Image (cartoon, rainbow, N blue to C red; front, side, top):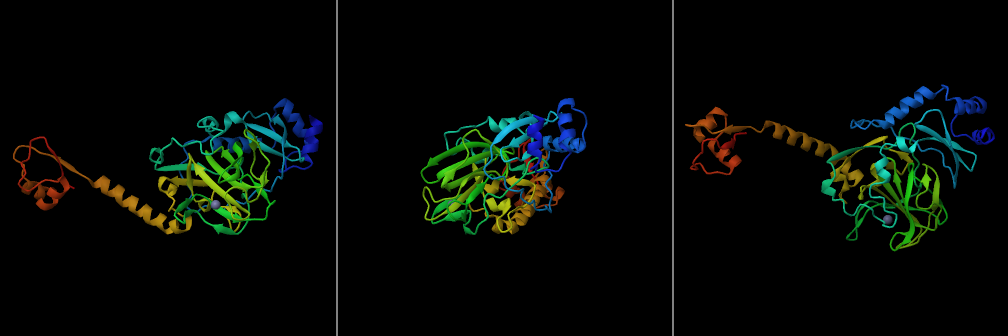
Length: 354
Ligand SMILES: [Zn+2]
């Protein structure tokens, strides 16, 4: 094992301790330089209550590409939450142990390897109004799927919803996994052509369509930056391009919401995904100002909701007296309660007064 490890570390992705010292910790599970910070990182990843999203996010740069690699071994680290995976191209990486993944349910719930879309029975209205999604952290990295000119954006196109983004390429260009995850679909289907769908630890799914070649199979674990296939023009396609989609519980949203395809960077490390983002009309660019407007609107609605006040009718109450008491008018009271000024008030009846 030490031999393999030395071999692997010679092409290491991360700078760490020398192979000898490191191999020792594999056996003794003694504390090793960097381990405490890694434990902290794991604790970060395990936090489930994180709904605070940084309002001024820093872009996240892509990790280096891994090419077409296969996992040849997985090693313990002395920290139950962490494993080391060794690839056949002499590189290695830390990964979270499966039982420590954000949500092990992610890879069980609606895990359908035959269906292109696995969440067909999930109604968009059943999803929370907002979901905080951790895109990357110290153990979950990112790589763009492909860097190319955008030839078609997310949104309605010729009367049909275009649920992804099209990036021009040359047939044979490598396509990369965007985040770590597990391959749910790898097959040829009408429309999408050669399609790979990866489900990620954070619950997102990414779709890579029209491929000329698929390099991964259903059930494969992949890491960000790993080559998963080659670009092409299979399926309903008029020329070589990558059709790339991002979905959450089956609902697509604009991939530009998370990836800046001009720089290849991820726009942020955490995403507050709102239900309204699933609308085919919710384009990222157009939505940026709308976003601010929508926040204001929601704030106003919250305030309005908080300001609503009721009065329970007692003996002797009249609309005129209530209007004076609550500083409003009889007309307004009638509007709020959908009654007439001549309506008879019942004792115990709840009237909205604001
Ligand atoms: Zn497309």
